[in-house]
Length: 434
Image (cartoon, rainbow, N blue to C red; front, side, top):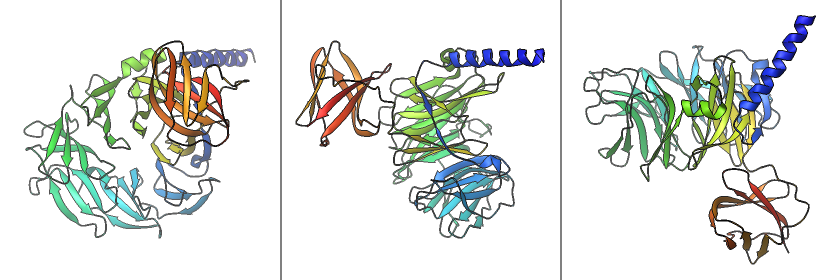
């Protein structure tokens, strides 16, 4: 009995130590919709919103349609004959699901009927779907008989209609397409003989309107493992492993600026030795979700990262992630066990201020007058008293003294809250609209 008590005490001490090691940023709790692991076998590979608001989730060898409000399984799609169904994507109209299967090949499900309607013939590496759902772009293993790094498939006939290749490069790997369907981002190996079969050291940005027009991005080192465009198509993010270091690489297509999130720096932030970093997922232009893990303890941290400010914005109370999707203000995340959960992107904790801050903040004719005792830059948002975001005012430059903030949306009569995010503790002020 005494030994049992000692184990409990040790566990409590360990938990407290781990909590103290987290960066000093707000923690966001998630709302769990369903844990598919309780009644479905296998690992989960992802979950996505369908156009009707419900969810399609892939666990094990089977896709499931989930009620987005109750978490109930509404129906089951046809099982794949291959146990490992990986990296699923759906077409924008919600009619087709595409996923990699062991081989590696891809399979296509018709979501309305639930049937598998296509299995690919060529052996592929990675794929992405055009935003309109009409084409699939897949990177291929080198085939001297049919040259080309990228195969383009018609999603109606499932026939290969084109092959793309650039600059004599021999090996292509991770791939994504911009939200406007105009640009492909593909990681490639620049070695003349294509000798690197696992690591890539360049990103080729291909203009699909003029397929002879492409840009090469070449950071230090080797090892692009993933590729993703931001929702506005202005940035790409990649998980990067050069054999010695693991980090996230972010490239701005407009400014050509490169940013890195390095595992060593995250270890310093968490005050512990982290041994792994997960695939980055954009939730908006300036924010990605990412995981880091401690192999000694088995603890995994999910956090959001503010790209312009190079800092952790929030810790999310959720274990790891396989996929991220969003619809309106709701972010859907899914982990390997099949736990589906929501984050409301427009809800923030509101400081309960007992009085209106009339000496600091006043409203008049769609303008806020804010009096500051210092100069700074802050991201500004207006919320109602329930914590729902009403207006995103973007970054504002504040000076010492009186500042005027124009509001581009009329406000109804009532009490609102201006929140100014300076990168540390957010400032919140109540104001009255009469």
